[in-house]
Image (cartoon, rainbow, N blue to C red; front, top):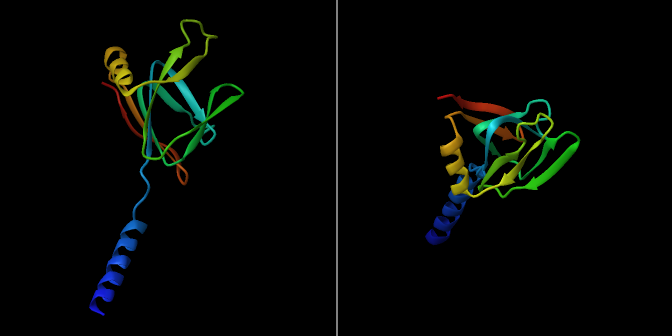
Length: 139
């Protein structure tokens, strides 16, 4: 009887602990050496402003990116994983649209170190609360 009581007690404690835990956020890093705005289907009116290093943490499993006017690209993300994107193209021409490309962690941080100027933004995009700027540093 004591063993059964102990098993039931442990089961209740483990279930209570697991209820209080939230799934880890997905981290999406963006790098651009010029200012770009990223709109998603969750923040059409309030874009993520990317200049140099920008982190977007989200609890969403997919995002629709509106990179160019009228075109939305949906990308699935695995919760708890970290993704790195860098802006390519755009050039000097005003009409040229920059695009994003997936990069490795090493390539991302190398670009951030070589071409970055110390600017950093940290956003949170949550299902319940929407987009919030958490931190902004200008060194």
